[in-house]
Structures are given as C-alpha cells and as structure tokens.
Image (cartoon, rainbow, N blue to C red; front, side, top):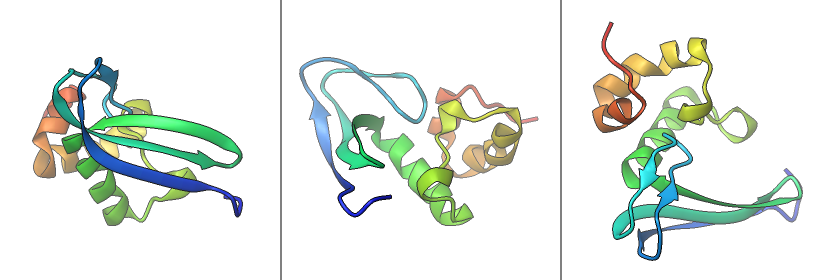
Length: 106
C-alpha cells in the first residue's frame, strides 16, 4: 500500500440500477440497502458494492482470521480449499451469505 492510498465507504440505498456484490457475486437489486466504497489501492482506483450482510460477514471473517489487505478473503473468488475453511463458519454465523454462495452443510 502506498502513501496516497485511500478508502471511503458508506451504506446507501442502491436506487438507480442493480449492482453486483463483490462478496457473493449476486445482484443487489435497486432500492435495496448496500455498502458502497471507492478508493485507491496500490495505484489503482476502484469502486465496489456489497450486500450489507455480505459486508458484515467479510469484515467479521477478517477479524476472526486476521486476514487483511492482500490476504482479505473475497468469498466469491475463493478456491475449493478456502471455501472448505470459511463455509462452516458462514453457515454458523452468517447463514444468509452462505445461502447466497450455495454453501450447504456437509
């Protein structure tokens, strides 16, 4: 991370059009609450939208595992081994997000 990196985020109502959630990959419908963020990381500008529940799950998982920055877990982009790690945790603590990711109990 460079000295000029920044991140700004807030909860909004997605009013104009649907967006795709960065965590689960599913659509956030217009008129639904969402977390919106914009910033610059490692010289690249970005914007992102997340379901409020997906944002909460991602942040809670990062707190639990201490995976931040480059190691932050984006649930929809996880490989099979990573899904095996966070799947049971999501089922227990964030079942709405587990359902969006099609994670089922063993």
